[in-house]
Length: 203
Image 1: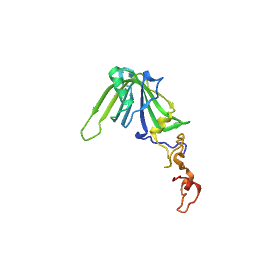
Image 2: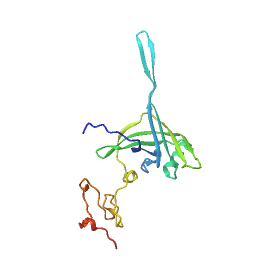
Image 3: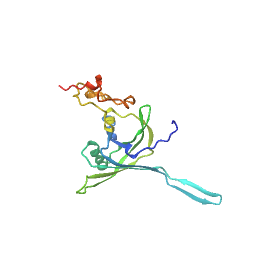
Image 4: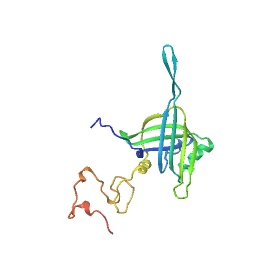
């Protein structure tokens, strides 16, 4: 149904980060092994009682942004320390990979700095980090295209077990595979002798 309400899952909401100074040098980077993402825009409100009734007032917008992840050796995890220790600005994107329009993903775009980066290093568990950002101004909404390598980080594509010769296509046919389609349901048999069933080179 066109008007069916779709539920968004937390597992499909991901944070990407880049030092602002590197905007012309590299793509935004997915923070690896995220376990939690909190995005909390808020505006404090108050009211003053007058003889004519309450008069509402509100403060400027404040946004809390926080990401927890399993600590790892990666450029982006080191860049988060760089923002905190060197007071460098970062760009951040909150990408909803299950909300798409015309091939683009819905996302929030934010700028700010890392203001806290706490880590837990229990002996019987993975080391974790909890990074908090101070966000400048108002977060902006929009639609973005993920680079090819970012798409691959989100989901890998089926491939056959044959060796891959030439350029990787990531269309389901690599390794002499055949992508699953809606026509694949209920298809296949033990006695199948079609060319698709015999495409693997065993040499």
